[in-house]
Length: 282
Image 1 (cartoon, helix red, strand yellow):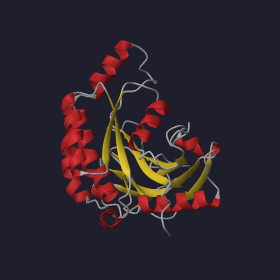
Image 2: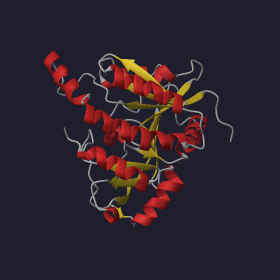
Image 3: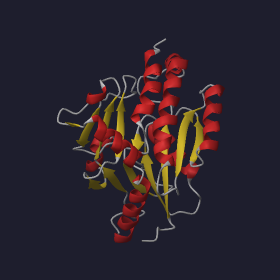
């Protein structure tokens, strides 16, 4: 099937973006939040995840015609901005978007438009965190499904639609090796491995609604079958994460093969690096 020329695939990763909302309500809140957000140990960990988990899984994509925007705040110190700019040389699909503090919808709308080629009628926009990964055929499958939904009229300029892959691996880096990997199919859409078909000027995107409530807001195409994401747990996640109670344990040998074949990653090589950074709490 020939890809539609009017549908562009773009991802956005909010990389330590200090935006409006939540507990940051006053100038002092921003200053305190910035101090926490940009602390050296934390930033070293975030770069370790981004450079060794997220970006490699995207670099291994079978369909390379996509962009990933790293959304950062204009308060980010220069040393970290410079490191991100250097990553653009290693990963040509990466683009950095620097914005002032704004709400989550306004900031992500601008980030998606930053990578828009100016011609495509539609953007199929996905979201990803810096410490997560997607399968190497994620872009290809998302594009194929989005193009079919547009052809069928299931999504159009007035009607956004979401594409949600529900099955993946939870990787708990804090456990012993034989207890680190868990197979799970989400019962509701997860932000990870989800995308939304919209127009570049549309008011909706995959960040607009809480992912758990997505199916109540837009049409959702859902696939719970193949392994499509890796979600990490390491004790420094910016959102609450835990192994779902009915997840199925994966033997370490099976998980390592799965990581290699489906995600282009090697837990044995990654874990020592991550664990060293996790020890530094100061």
